[in-house]
Length: 161
Picture 1 (cartoon, rainbow, N blue to C red):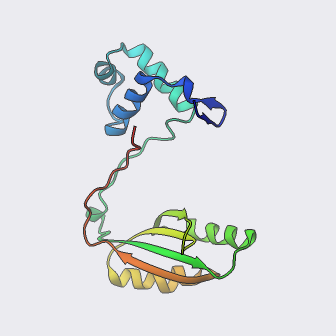
Picture 2 (picture 1 turned 60 degrees about the vertical axis):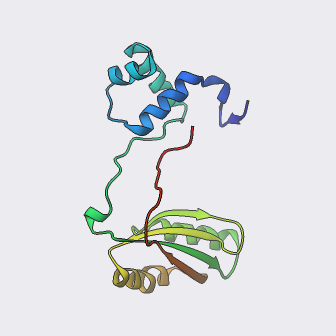
């Protein structure tokens, strides 16, 4: 099987995969409720979950917050091309981007662009301010191409298992 870090995927079985599926759907379930869903008793479920956490299969637990209820009505995907490509410049770009709160995701990508940013803002005026004040202060950006989300068809935070 495939090796990942210091452990092997051979250490994970179908019950572990089912536990991960259940936790991705609702991490607030009690150990007893999870145990019922995977047909085990609570103690082995608890031990398996702790092992999955320790081995890094479960990175953290988080609440999925409704952005619109917080006034974040506009989601933008922004493709970024850097002017220059050196290790120092790339590292500086990443350091600057991760410090900007409106950037909720950042991917280093291949193809015509270097990075893909997912940005969440209140509205177009907020995005304009973001581009001028925040993105505009990041050095070495050659171009930025914005795509505005007009409707969400599918949004899934779960890893396909």
